[in-house]
Image (cartoon, rainbow, N blue to C red):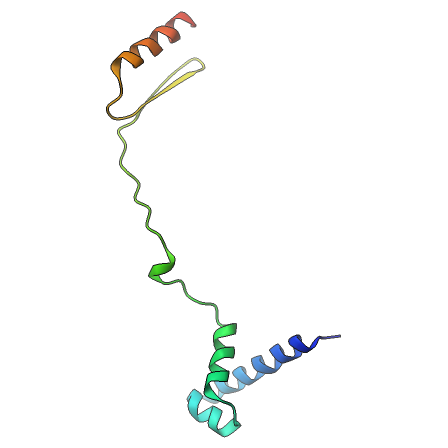
Length: 99
């Protein structure tokens, strides 16, 4: 058994289909059917999926990286732009001693 909200939804979908297939302007169809334009517009908008607008998106700019990855055995070293050479040398020594 359908509840009242479901019946109301079906009723408005049928009215919107009728308006849409009539080929008439919303204002004219509403006048002929004694329905306030704002009410029909509300239901149309309720059933129409909204298209995303520019303000719905956030642009994420990925910074170009000059990263270097060194892999050896089970070790992996990631070097970003401006890395400390002394740290790299220490890491390489550890890698050599554990190979």
